[in-house]
Each structure stands twice: as C-alpha cells, then as structure tokens.
Amino acid sequence: MPELPDLEVIRENLAARLLGRAVLSLKVRRPGLVQAGPSDLFPLLGKTVREVSRRGKHLVFHFDENLFLIVHLMRFGWLWHGPSRYEVTKATTLSLSFDDGTDLRLIEPGTPQIAAVWLYSDLSQAEPLKKLGPEPFSPEFTLENFSQALRGKRRQVKKILLDQAIVAGIGNAYADEILFWAKLSPFRYIHTMTEEEIERLWRAIPETLRWAVAEIKARVGGDLFDKEIRDFLYVHGRAGAPCRVCGTPIGEVLFEGQRTNFCPHCQNVGQPVSK
Ligand SMILES: [Zn+2]
Image (cartoon, rainbow, N blue to C red; front, side):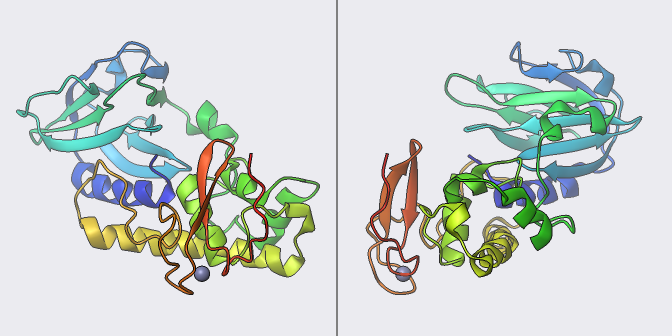
C-alpha cells in the first residue's frame, strides 16, 4: 500500500504534469467508485487543475470553482498518466482526459476493487479527511501535541504509528522504519516509554519520512510508479537479512495480521509478543 513517502513523490510528479490542464472528458468505469458527489463526476468537465496536495494517504486534486477530487489508492490502486490514445485497460476504474492529449487513469488490478474517490466543493466538509491527525511535516506536529495525543493510551507503539488519527500517512512499512530509526522495539507499550523515548520517536517520524521521499525521488525522477519502491529500507521486508547497522539478522513476526520487521539488537527487542 502506498504510504506518505510514495504519495508525496506521486503528488509532486502529478502536479508537474497536470497543473493548468483542463478536463475535456472523463469516465467513471466502476460503479461505486465515487463515495461522495455525483457518481459521474461531471462537475469536473471543463475545469482546470490548480493544485495537487496530499492529506494522509489521500491525494487531493484542486480544480477551478472550488472542486476537490480526493483519491485513496487503498492497497493495490495506482495512478497512470500518459497519452489519451493509449488503450484503456480493464483494470482502469476512472479516466480523466486533459486538453494536452493526456489521460490520468486510476488503475486497480485484481478484486475486490476498493480504491475510492470523493468529490467535494468544500474541503473542510470532506469526510475522509476529518478524522486525520496532523501531517508529520506540518508545524502542528509538535512534540507537545504528539505527547498529548499519546496520553492515556495503553497500546503498543507500532499500533500508535498506524493510527491515522494520531499522525497521518504512516502504514506498515514506514512504521517499522521509524521504529528502527528511533531504536525502539515495535512491541513496547506507549505508557511504558520515557519522555526521552517519546521525543526520539517524534523526531524519527518526519526524519524517516523525509529520507524516504528523497530516496524514492532519486529512483523515479519525474515518473509515476505502480510498485512500491522499498529497496533502500533498513528493516521492512528484510527478514533474515543482516541489519545494515549491526549485522544481526532482521526479525519478523506477524503483528495484528501484518508483517513486522525489526533489528533485535539495534531496537533492543527482548521476547517479541506475537499474536
Ligand atoms: Zn541492527
């Protein structure tokens, strides 16, 4: 699933391609794709893209006349941008054709197709964005606010990082990387952590994500991509491989049904709590 760093690069590259382009035609190719707004998305016809932003794991396309198209790629969705004359594949669930002869297409191979879009005329009313916590790169993501959000919680730290209401945009892979960067075991309970450890975690969140944005950008340049680019990660997806810092084999357990990877040495993991 694309997470903040992937989406940030996609956002930047889409903005470079789409700003100032007007929608000539569009087609919603999967019934039920549009979660809010008219299901045909026709209000977008003739409108120009003014901005592409990101909120958590959502991309937001800002059009003329305060129209906001929100896209969540979910697990396997991806965005394609290229010549409109290219054949539309069966897995395409939405296509927008622009006045420069290009298409933006939402593609979701396999079933069930769960990627979703919303159309709003007022972003403050956008349901999927309402419950999101602060953006890790924003001034609102202060140590004070973060500590406040953790107060009274008795949950393992990895679950905290995955909670979009506490901090937006982090998924399974980057939760693991952040915890490696912070030298914290994913199995620690948040209420057992010292202030110094909380601060280390808070610092590691934007640092890890910024590093990942730069690594992905260095690999794709201005291109879009349909696969997760994760070869540079230190722990996630590297079970059994030697830790790049200390050489200890990277550990793996299933945690809430998802793979969790960690370095037993660098992250001082005792007996992992496995479910
Ligand atoms: Zn290590």
